Image 1 (cartoon, rainbow, N blue to C red):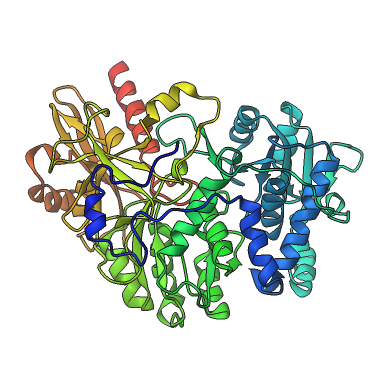
Image 2 (cartoon, rainbow, N blue to C red):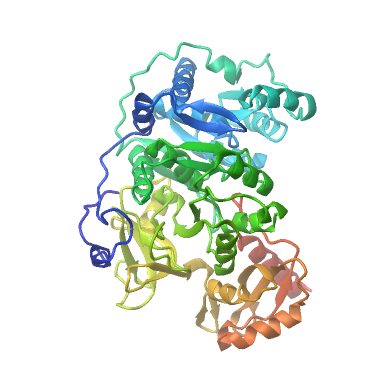
Length: 569
């Protein structure tokens, strides 16, 4: 969906009050993803792009590897528009396959390495993926092999985990952590990654229209239904990377970012991978999030940026090394994926000296649409101001074709160069998600006098108590004010008289001596009549999504099943 950079909706606020170091209505020339990488590699081929467990990969080396991937895919018969899947953790193979597939015009499809066979099978079939990249690891290859046997997948490209490590660590891996499984050399559909790139990397001239050609099929999290493939064009991805780069007051200076967020997720795909390349920076890749490894990596590499989700920052705070680690190199930590509790922000800033800014984005928006400024006014509890070139509206919750009445909350909607082309083979869903040029988020928001956006809640998460609307996030915010509470989720549970009632689920900080009844007695007097919860349930853990975001849907399913059993008895 295209739009003109002219004032829409609330945009006049940002024409007067814009705190990012950019123009609120900046534009971004069309650019393909491979061109963004090549532009940096041509100017500084020897600069480091990847630090993987201490092994460095330069821009020039990465481009050469991507070209060999492109040539290898071409020789397998893959052509422009074909779907190439990545079933990979954060390893150098991912970067080479991602840019290599896009160089020859293929569409990359991201798959979580934590997917079950059924989850992977569904998305492979839905996307029509022809080639799948994975690793010869026990956690990945058996799943990929079973999916190959049950789908139309034509080729499986298998890389070695040890192959990406420094020589010493590679040897240790083989001797002591040999969790790799053997390939099947007798199956012609299976190709070793090393064999795929055993070519001269001859350039393949594939014309790419950045604004029309799809670069990435990124499946939504499925928190409110079946995951859908968001069609993200080359321009969607490169524009969003450049939007993020442009709001950094220190762009052009040394740039080193911790890549602990999974690259298969849109947050890391844009904020770690593509953003870093847009500025010519360096990624310190970690195969998965581990608090101790992140702390060690920050100190070893003198990292400057650390993006994460709130649960990651909490895990870092819980790690014993946090008290003695040197975080003096850290400048900015960007939090996304879920609301950032004020207490977590303040504690992490006190422990590290870094600024934590909260942002917001969706799969459908290529990653990011709004964030608090890195320097200057940082409003706790808001998602900041929109990225340059991003237009905002608040839509009437009853009629999305109308704007919300002045001063009232409305459904948050965005337009801009980072908004997806649409959902893959889902025309009916496209009709629902767009209001003209604007992408509907499903989140209810308010915009204050300074142009800062505050999410009130999700439309689908609102609890209807006797006709009154209760926003779970507002109840959760009160819970987080209790020093005993570590994590909190509030959902609506069935109620025969009022339809629904709120119920809270929490985990507690170590040493907290507060029981569920005491917490209930503390909470409810601070809430409005219809917001009061029927119970507080204390648990060891709360459900999370693959990227570590607290997830309500599992709790909702549990409570519905419990209510059904009670009704049947």
